[in-house]
Image (tube, rainbow, N blue to C red; front, side):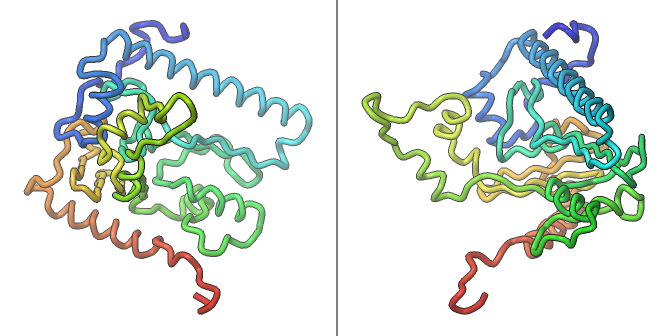
Length: 279
C-alpha cells in the first residue's frame, strides 16, 4: 500500500472517453459515480502497482526454489494473467466483460524454458488461446484438434508476426433478459445485486455481445446493439477518443471488419455435435 507514494508515478487518465460506449458510461453511473475523487483514483493506482510488485517478488521466490532444487533447467515456467484491471482508468475499478481497453486485455506474458532465449523480449500480438499450443510444441506433442490458438514458438524465434488479435464477450439478448428476472433465494427474498451486478441489472445492454479486433495500430469493437468503437492507438494509446464512423476512417473500418469477419468464420464452432449424423 505504501511502495508508490504520490509523485512517484504518472497518473492514468481518469476521464470518460469521447464517444464512450454504454459499457463504460454505465459503470461510471453505478459503480464509481460521475466524479470519483481524484485522490481515491490515485490510491487505487498506487495499490495496483504495489500488487504487481508483490506478484513479481512471489514469482522470484518460485524461480529461486526451482533453481535451488535443480528443476529450473527441465521446467517450463509461464507467467501471465487472465486479464488486467482498471486501476482508475476512465474513473473505474476492476473489469468489465464487454469493454476491451488495453488495460483489461493486454497482460504480462513471460516464459522460461529450454530452447527459449534468456532475456529476449518480443513485441508482437498474441492471444491467451496460444498458451496451450505453445506448451504442446515445447513438449514435442501434437497440437490439440480444433484449437483456435497457435504456438508462439515461431513468434519467439522471430519467424512469424501476426497482423491482428481478437477477443469477444458479453451475452445474447435472451440471456440479458433472463438476468433481470427476480430470483428468490430463501427467506431474504430476491437476489441481492450490487456493483457489477447492479450495473448489469440497470443497463443490460452494457453486457451485449461484442467482438474486438486489434492490430498494432488500431482497435475496432463491434457490438450487437451498435455502440461500436474505433481507436487509433498510435495517436491515442489510452483509447480516449472513439473515432468510429468518422468518414476519414472508412477504409480502416472496412479492413478491420474484414479481419473480424474472417476470424468469426474461422472460429465459430459447428455445435453441438450430432452423433446421429456424424457431424
